[in-house]
Length: 168
Image 1 (cartoon, rainbow, N blue to C red):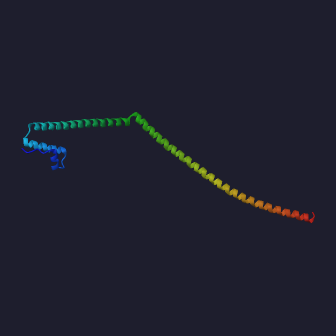
Image 2 (tube, rainbow, N blue to C red):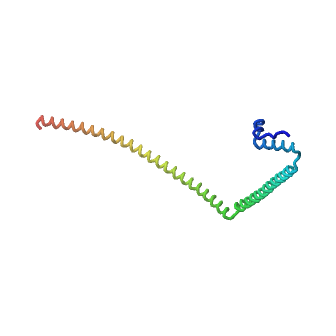
Image 3 (cartoon, rainbow, N blue to C red):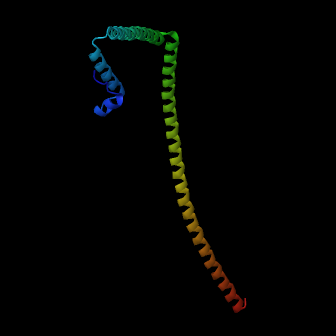
């Protein structure tokens, strides 16, 4: 009878294998030496049945979830359909339309008012400019008259002085 290899020896021999793979390898060697083990075969059968049960369980879960999702989608569609045609929704839609119309009307009104204000500002600026020109002309005329008045005052002063000198 040959000596069974330890996990350590197997790990040295097969460094790329995991511990579980090495254990399976060691167990396979044992069964090969001892022949087919009835208990091992029964264990394999039970594991296979567990695997089938496991798949059946997930398949059932998937089918239940799929059915629930379809029901939820159907209910959502019904709620959306009812919601869009409900009296409350129709009332809200008409209110939205009325508010849109009011907004449009107000926008036009404020545009007109804004335009009128710009026109009034333009008129006021025009009047201001003409007043500035007129004030400039008046200022020039005032300066001319002051100079003329000064010249006349000097002329009269000379005449009065000449009259005093001549004895008058």
